[in-house]
Image (cartoon, rainbow, N blue to C red):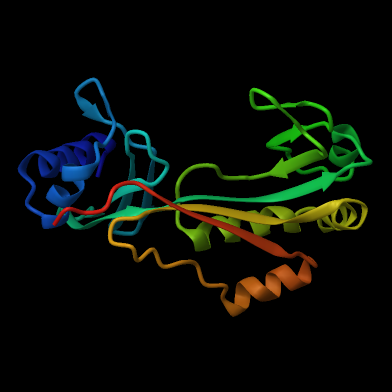
Length: 214
């Protein structure tokens, strides 16, 4: 199933609203279009199933379509949270270059103590962040990908844990559609992987958006 066919299926549903949840969502939020085409943030293909993430105006969470690629039919529609999972190492003594030199992994973002933070703030610590995948995906896929990346340089990550404050940070922003947001589960496999890397994990969970009217 091509990207063009996926867009056609989704736009047809947005126009015709065959699923009740489509009407519920469109009553309170607007998916983002580029011209006359729906914007797509990511497409996950798994055998005959496709998961499509669509951004929503002024929100971080996504409108997600589940599609059967074989018969080109929608299996389900829901809102999925914005998820960012990354390794973060901070230090008040070491600078960004010192922290970066501990590992050969690609640094996604970094700053030095004293750098400007936002419009009026100043960072009180130096920091490096490693986030191999910033595209939308589910919690389990994203944390597995990060753990696999960190395993490529166990020695460097261990140094960042010992010499700085190194840990995994999870940030999730859910749609507060009906007040029930759920949350991630740390499986035995994830816990073992964290233990093997001597890593702690921190969760920041947020809710946003409008409640369903019906």
